[in-house]
Image 1 (tube, rainbow, N blue to C red):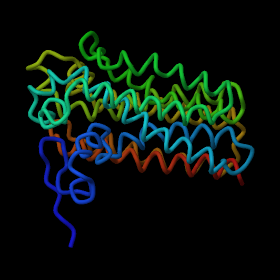
Image 2: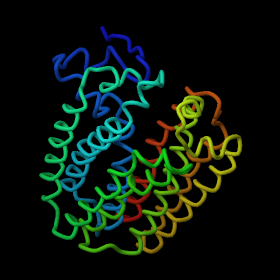
Image 3: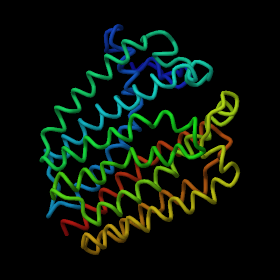
Amino acid sequence: MTSSIFLNGDIPVGNWIDRRVPAVIRPYLRLMRLDRPIGTWLLLFPCWWSAALAAPSWPDPVLFALFATGAVVMRGAGCTVNDIADHEFDAKVARTAGRPIPSGAVSVRQAVLFLLLLLGLGLLILVQLPPFAIAVGAASLLLVFPYPLMKRITWWPQAWLGLTFNWGALLGWAAVRGEIGAPAVALYAAGWLWTLGYDTIYAHQDKDDDVLIGVKSTALRLGDATPRWLVGFYGGALALIAAAGWLAGLSWPFWPLLAAAGLQLAWQIRSVRIDDGADCLDKFKSNRFFGWALLAAIVAGRVW
């Protein structure tokens, strides 16, 4: 019999972490957001897209496995950095007050030590890649650490997140080709716009609390005009993905499958209810399907 899952703020309880993991470890897995894998998928897909785009035929399964493991570890590290920086804000917001640091389950010192462990594991994974890719991957830390500060100084913290979360579009190509080519740059720009779209939708969950505690977001900046901006964000992302496919010389199956993937983004724009937090979360999570659809398009266009 499967236990029901209830929410403590944004923390799922009664799931596999509660059922199968010793109590002393649970707060650290929640700090990594292992019980909410959508963020790992969103970090991973640009790596997989780019590696598949750069591959001569079928993508390398070992490289895909390295990227998957690295995405789990580095997404956990990013969440830990974010929670260390934001724990005072999180304590004031009902949705985030139950997170490990503001709830007292993990101290700031413990979180810092755990972050060092994750960064060490990430380094072990990174050094399995070619030298140029190692340098590209290490450079991503210049974006990871400032991110939590962005919501304090700009209405566009989602733009910085887009730069950070899509670094894999450069890393995947570098791991296969030993360089950064034009298709990878186009894919990186596309991912940046994609992130602006999905994370603006996500930020609409918190806009009332963000006003109260004095932090900024594109949800607050764009307000009721968000659906019109989504047309630009997602439309631009699709155009740049098409450019990446053309530059990489993908064959004809890429194009109808890309169009099919674009329908998922169009559905988000048409149906999102920006004043319904539950619907915003559902639309945000649905980007996993777009990620898989685009991966299928790239692989088909490469191996056909």
